Image (tube, helix red, strand yellow):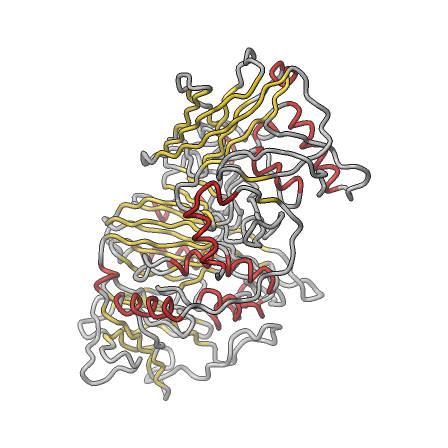
Length: 637
């Protein structure tokens, strides 16, 4: 049984299939298993139905009529040979850009653009058509002109293109699928494998989930940056694990996808551009206009040729291009702006010139999407934060989604029963993929945790004075060299009389939660009570501290490895009544997101007069989304 079959069987079996799942130390990645022939055939059929075919941009070599002007045609490639034949007409009204100027093809599909060295020319795919893909399903819609090629770069950079060609023609295949109002658009951020072991974890985890899906053949997958981890020689392996996607793959660059030995930002994406395409571009699907921007500005290599650091910023050239690009987009269209670094998250404004971007988007029906932070967030128009206001963003005007990560918390933590790192992210969310569901010019979003159904959106816990004291000591012990015996946690679902006398809460980490979400708790079958959103987005300062931690994820990362945060955009809590009777209690938690979708999980916890000596800790999953029981293994085991 291959890893996907095992995962699907576990999901079908439900909670019982997860009993006995123990956190262990990481090991080697699984040996790659070949894709079943029938699955490949099904994927090929889905691609064909979406009008997807293998091809390339047509570069017509020869002397350009004017060395300062690039000309060409956008054409319907009927025979799918990537060459414009006599009976293949041009497509009128299509945007083509050199990264600065934006023009629209005439009635015969022709365009002309100012030409300059170091330009990437690209077509904006119109709805109702598909650009071709290469053998790895990477969308082919651009041509880079750099006559002399890159300077000497470790990972190759751009090959010399020679003089300006006679023409660059962009083939398109007709596709009813890309013209439909309903679209599923997966966004896979931060695959970020630093070696082949981690690439195997990605392949058998969230990427395998994507390869099993058949709902995105027209929209395709957007890889939202940090696609590899610094080592660009891993790009072929990245292509390999995504190659069986049933739709086109487009990529945004991240700060770990750059040529670190480049002298400055102008050369930082040369290898990326050679292997994947432009750093920023746009395309249409359904009634949405998708814009991918590069939000990383490289400072240039250090004297030793190593990473010189970066700014999170959208440069002026891109902002000018974006204005020109959007000038051709009807106001009634949804504009999706995707960029590696999110414009902001719950804690701060991240992109330095965020107000300038928001000025360009003002008045648009828009949503911005980012990755980079290895968090999952859903921030809504009208949300306000003290830290945002100080950075020039008094109120959020457009939904901001932070897309989580394929790598989770960088493949950290113990291994699950599939041999994959738990990798709980710092906000407690798990590795997975965000999907943007388009319906005309409206959208909804859903996050699918690796190996799970969309219904798993809650993690429950108990936050007590005992847990907070243990967490602080455990973090100091773990990150201080693990000197001496590890602090003992014991049963994390046990609440002592002393705990009740202090501040103790039931916590609900609602992954899909936003400022308009609601979380209700019923203890022992009593009336449901609203829990408090710890970061309500009403102009308050950042809520931070162990009392704002998701104990479910934090405990697991503290006992193994991985980041632990003390703030969270989607954590709710309810104070435990101080008069709870001794014994075991049940809390049923129902969370409703801002789109009306409900999710319910149950937590059992025990109240005791005295806390027994905590000698050992074992984490054993019982039901997805609930806090596991703790018995009998050393805390550092």
